[in-house]
Length: 159
Image (cartoon, rainbow, N blue to C red; front, side, top):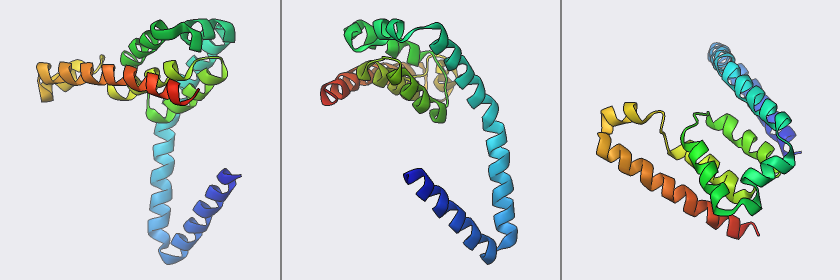
C-alpha cells in the first residue's frame, strides 16, 4: 500500500515540476532513464546469479550454511563472503531478503550485508593508494569486527 502512495506522490511531483519548468523536468527524466539504463545490467546480472544460487541450493542447505543454527561459524563465513564480494547497495538488500526467506539467519545476513557495505578486500589496493596500506588495513579490520559484533546485536534484538 505504501508503495502506491510513494508512486502517487512522485507522479504528482513530476506533474507539478512539468508545469513549473518543462525543460528541466524533461532533462531530469532523461537523466534518470539513462541512470536506470546503466544500472540495470548490473542489477539483472546479480539477481540472475543469486537466483541460480537459490535454485541450486535448497532452503535447508542455505539454513545449514548460514542459518540461525550455524552459529559463529555461519556469521564468520557470511562476513568473509561479504568482505570479498562487490555488490551495489540497491542489490544487496533484496538479496538479503531472498536469503532470509530461504532460511538464512538474521545474524548471518547482517554480517554479510554489513561487510558488503564496509569492508573491501577487492578494493584494498585502490583504497591503499589514497589512505595508505596501514590505514586501509586498520579500517577494514575494524569494520570487519564491527560487522560481526553488530550481527550478534541484531540476532539478540530479533529473537
